[in-house]
Length: 390
Ligand code: GLA
Image (tube, rainbow, N blue to C red; front, side, top):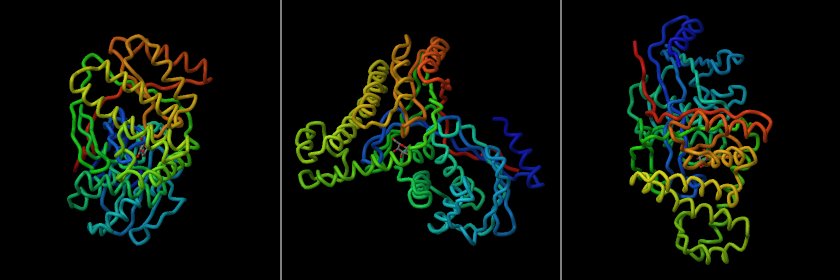
């Protein structure tokens, strides 16, 4: 992204120079899907696609905000005095939610800001553009108003915005992956305790190819909340028989007894996914640390199969992309990433095979689905940063 375009836009809209510019990444999840809200382990990383902002302080209480991605919306204005959710404020609600909860947490924000934003995370791709925006706003506020905000505190605040301000019942993974992002490292996060380890992630001779189905994720939120409800129902049935706080406290040996207690084939499948996925995350991080990419790839495949058959969050587009990837020479594994129901998949592909991989997978996808997929070679980047100051 050419930062000067954003800065010029800022000048033409707000008729002054920006005082500072910021960036926050998006994320991909390598493995550990739909288990952050089940107390499981996740293994995501921040990517170099993300959201940029040019910012300047105002003397009054107003926030005036403009996005190059939604130019038809023009400048959206709101005041510190009224931070209630307002549908017509569209994407700005993410910023308002962050400010509201920062204030509630006792941080001092007493004047407004002019902000111009540009994001290069493809819309609706499941690479966490909303968490990117939330973590960007946390970085903007802590810098411009000079208070300290720990990365995990920012992540929890972003989750609160999603859950209570926007109304999406998501877990902590996306915000944590972004807030704690480190170049060429992935985050192994225990979502039960919030303990984490930052693990070097450099695949010698291989790249992560992100494959976007370009399918609109219409039903994503309602289906997401449905899966969460199924897990909660199963947990309530299991707790009289097991001393557990979350589904991922179970082990694979417990599954037989769990099936009897749950007595509901669909809910049992959801539990089986959660428990086996948790095991796969541990195995995958071990494989990676031993430089065993072949095993790592096989675990990605097993994760996709479980998300397809047991958790049922893939769909024809993701399954077609992933099946096409599995057929390619030089691809060690592939799986959907993120919430599912459209969005993106990832594959570990040998560097000298990425061009043929993309051509072949795209051709098969287009033949089956009727339109093309998009492809990006992932670079693993840093968390939120200030990139310029006056
Ligand atoms: C979305 C949510 C995350 C996580 C994933 C699935 O990205 O925001 O909290 O649940 O789906 O792993």
